[in-house]
Length: 263
Picture 1 (cartoon, helix red, strand yellow):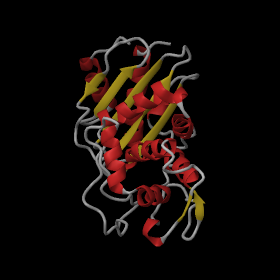
Picture 2 (cartoon, one colour):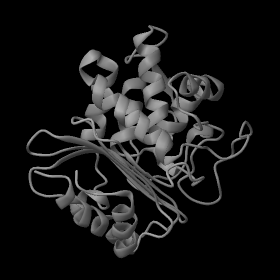
Picture 3 (cartoon, helix red, strand yellow):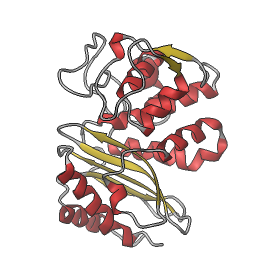
């Protein structure tokens, strides 16, 4: 990787990304990661779904839950999604199906079901045990205003870009160690939202990733594998509205960064 932190800042500015939090980390050659304002306090939106999935997977590994355990969608879970949710009021589905949809389709209903099943305190404590320094689940997710009725909410969720990069690093390095990593990774590979960084990649590149969007933020991050097999963690958070013009800025940044990563 032949790019410096100053280069990274310039590439982001030229792409139109305003006040971004960025992590670019090579995984296979010992080069240090580049962190540009990666601890900035930017609302994570749907990026919070990855730590929820990783906590659930770790609890399955510990046999506290199973992928085939089920739960029913109640009125307290229902909210809007960008894509139609299969999890309608009264639907009963396996927790593993909720977890996959939460990542691959960014399903908010599935997320809210898992928050209820796992418990916010359990999720936040497990995140701390993973070494995440500032990741906390305080409230359920809402797909639109007004926000979902959530009497147990205690603030806004937190999951900064550097914590997201740490989870992607764990996932990439430990994927072969157990089913929990394979299931989560497979769901990221099945991502249906590919309008941001993915649009700046080259043919043959492979990006297992998660996005996050609201009217105020637009994020993307994941594990990039080049045709040569070299791997990178790429995470970009922006306090910019999620719309086609911001998506184009993400794509322009990735297009400009990509030549610096090799083949």
